[in-house]
Image 1 (cartoon, rainbow, N blue to C red):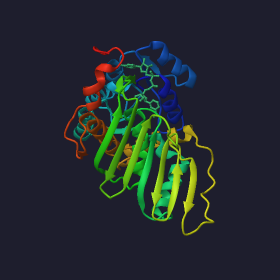
Image 2: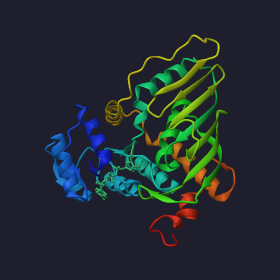
Image 3: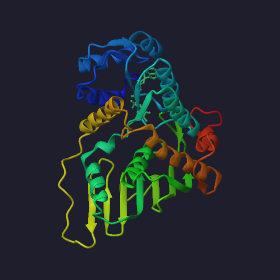
Length: 334
Ligand SMILES: NC(=O)c1ccc[n+]([C@@H]2O[C@H](COP(=O)([O-])OP(=O)(O)OC[C@H]3O[C@@H](n4cnc5c(N)ncnc54)[C@H](O)[C@@H]3O)[C@@H](O)[C@H]2O)c1
């Protein structure tokens, strides 16, 4: 494991549930963070403060990286160069579209598999909704209202990933967005908006309206699906809210257990290891993460340039950072 802060605790719980994994080394700039994680979970792992040294000495098969966003690409590159077979990284992919593309390029050219922790795909409720949609219970999706409780890059990635998983992974066609940048903060090292709203049109014709942050969100997280034969509200963790099937008013959604983060994290680790064992595309593959990531950077480009943006995205920076980054705390001009 590289990075032994808050998210590493959740990753560690997922790792302990996977019999094919043994945690052999923990690395954090803060020695006490790595040693503390080792003690809490009783891994008996070697403790390092330099990930390159750990990679050279331990030669792990798999790395779980729980690091702030700007470190995702450089640490993944080091892992791939060291011959690691698979890296499970925290989301979001990277601070810019170019870095996200570079991670994908390295994964594809080196053979080091790459997955991202969009753990909510493994929540029971989200699985149930995918099944109901596949069975045609609600008819065809027409539109979705999407909600992100913090900035688009850091949290919108979960919401767009959820929307893509419900919408047959259809790529987006174009986006149009507006941003409130009257206050810019840093979210895990990346400048973030006060609020963003966007219209996203997918290649399969489905339309989605996104609100990240800001007042009057009528759902805290997740999405509302408007379909030809129904309406369904689903929270991030698969909590079902309003649910109606128009031609069957007596229909009620299935009774589901309360969402369990540990079960979702067990799914994340199992998915990465299954991908390595079978060679099949994991549910949390970098290819799927790229789709959500491209929409995010297209929204930032549209908001920063006041234009509708067609995909595939050609600009490789983070347009929000380029245009508004100097307002972030600590930046020159802030
Ligand atoms: N999947 C989710 O639901 C979810 C939720 C919250 C955060 N996140 C993501 O998780 C990531 C990490 O967040 P966190 O809350 O764990 O942060 P954190 O600050 O709690 O932990 C990061 C750790 O990395 C260590 N570190 C920094 N540089 C290092 C280096 N070069 N080598 C080794 N260790 C290093 C730090 O000392 C710290 O202990 C962020 O990118 C965030 O977006 C994901």
